[in-house]
Image (cartoon, rainbow, N blue to C red; front, side):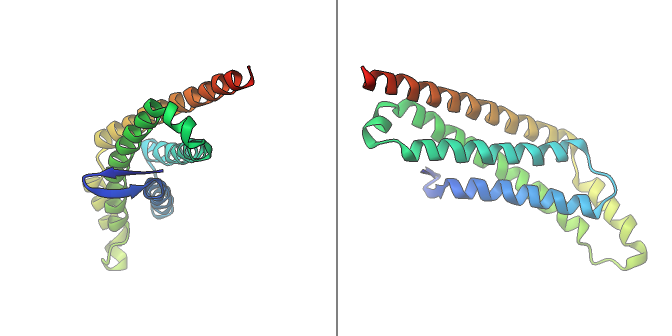
Amino acid sequence: MAFEFAGAHIAIASILSGCYSIVKGITQLRQSYKFMPLTLTNIALTCNATTSILDTIDSILTAKSVTMRDSCQVLLDHFDGLKTGCFLTLSVLEQYVSDLLDGANSDIPLKAQKTARRKKWEALYNESDMTQLFGQLQNYNNLLGNLLRRLDRYDYLYCERDLD
């Protein structure tokens, strides 16, 4: 499934790629620093859940026949809206993680590197912003989970009606 955002054609693969990039970046940060804020760890776990839910919904919708997809158009519209929201939130998170990684990959001489990297980290990391973005991502995951349950219920009802 693909959708259009600001005139650009964006596939679900770009959202999944963003999730992968965030998880990979947070893993690299964990290797670079002795501490890791719980919010970043939770963001990585939530990105993994987002990937799983998006893959599942996309495969369900792809497997549906054209007539069945037409009859659940409202759910498809909700899915497109949720993909757009996820894309925007993940884009901001991806930029934050990228900035934090740039601080970890400093070119400062070795003696001062640890201190300088830590100061860059503290200057770049904003817990309140991360908490807010994490909350948005959790909300999208909850909404995607609800959509998945509605699709399952819709499948059940649609299949029951076909059997009668």
